[in-house]
Image (cartoon, rainbow, N blue to C red; front, top):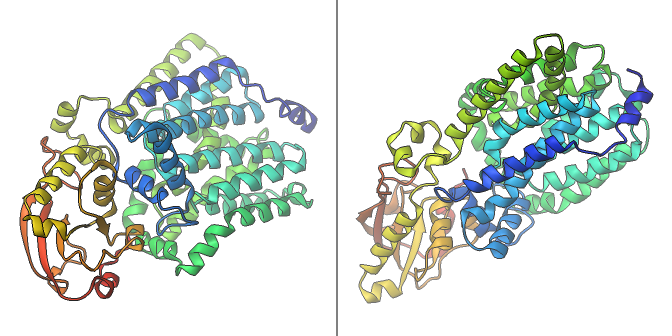
Length: 498
């Protein structure tokens, strides 16, 4: 394949209709199950954070919180409202994986195979919940597609789109830096000086930094809390590293993982893939950097888009070597099994009572943590209502973590003001001086409440009514009185970053 052939092909932006259909099915499936159980704690936290607009937060840049708050403002308070954008993001990744397949030489069938592989992979799970991950995966896929086109000889001004995407993506999650490092080392190892021998790559870096600058300034003026967060995460480095291989296997498809593996080998070894060798190198480099720094296992998973796309070419050629009907049936069954297994593990496809009686809550905590929030809020309301009228008038709710506080803020009504020392919630305190009766929710953090109050006693226990062992089940609600100091003096000691 000659460079002129590649360049001509990458001028096209037409997406085959089967790919569009597959992306549409992803959106339809995700929205169909979007409200089955309930909010994830992080989703409610993002909405509340977005209602406190800032250039940054303790645990993430501002983009996802602002989008989450806007979604609720437009569509109302519901899990579906915040999950529309993640569903669309997952569908766009499906399209981008197909476009990458096309631009590295894939036929229309290969593009469809790539779309199927992406649609039944971990991208489906990421599209179910409103977290920073969905937008991050979309940014990785878009940059990888643009990089494929640049490596194929596209107009160097396309670097400006890379810079724009990176700048917006960094306002969502800093993990794009791993991709940047991987691509830089990939270009160096592949000796692709031609791709960076112009002013446009440097203009792209300038655009990305300019767009990221507000968050960097916020971090600097607030003591770099995200570096503190990173150090907390690195404290679990051994667990993070142990999860890397299982996550790679599960994300790329419990059965279809072989497609991504074949794509990685093709990008790294095939003579046809020489123009894109830098991308084949970038994926392992990004992964090694994540493992070396003790980051969470999913931080570099975004490079899977390129390997799925390349793998579709390998599968397509396998199909045409004979017995296409039998091989096609094998791929179809593998895709169905992969998709069904991932949906079973990560989507709320089971009736909630059936789910509660299964082993899934212990296997996939994120799904379990979507259950029981209305009962949680009702229990806290009951504890507040049981206070004598004079105490209720002076009461404040203090929670162990941001999920509990966010649920009370978003789903509760008629409650005392809600505060927490956890992550960005700490920035929105302390409580008013006259609020001297505390309804505390969850485990104590810090553990010694006697540093702050004269006395505390438990008044209720959280129970989701299904016995689902999630982050709130069985936690205590207590009432504390007798502040040992002013809220202003105590508040620094109640801060937690995790």
